[in-house]
Every structure is written in structure tokens, then in C-alpha cells.
Length: 117
Image (tube, rainbow, N blue to C red; front, side, top):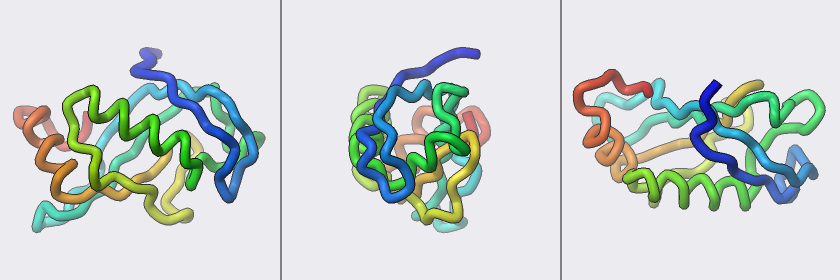
């Protein structure tokens, strides 16, 4: 499995006190609203993070900050990326809301592909 990047948690989230490295293996956008002003970004991780033992990454400030920095370094506009609701989080991914700025940059990089990567 390819590791795209490694991000870190600080343990300050509402559902986890675990501070550790998390290997990111895939990002995708499984949903984009018809008006192209809202969507979902899923950030997949490998077994370096176990939701059953480590809790949800959701709301961890360091993870969100590092993710935005990494997305920016990859040519995406991460200015409107933020965690989605707790119920959207998965066992193998972090769900984030994205808006027009991110979606425009996503489309520019993936114009010839489907919305997922």
C-alpha cells in the first residue's frame, strides 16, 4: 500500500487523546453538490490508526492543520476544508467538508478523471 504522507494527531480531539503518526494512503471526493459549492473529502489511513483502540481523529487540531498544509503543498486550495460531522467519520477514513475553493482546485488537478482519486 502506498503512503501519500504521514500526518500527526495531538490527542486534543473530543474522541481521542492519542498523539501519534497516521499514514495517509488515499484521498478522494465521493460527493460534490450539483452547484459545485459543497462536497465531501475522505482522507484514508492505514493500520497506523485503529479507530477501535485510538478513537476518532475527528476534531484533532494538529491533524487538520497538517492535512491542510499537505493539501496546499499538493496544489489544492485547502482554505475551506474542515471536519464534517461526527457521524460521517469512518473506520478507515476521516471525513471533511469542502467548499468551492477546494473543489475548484480538485477539478483543475483531476479534470480528466472522475471526482475520486
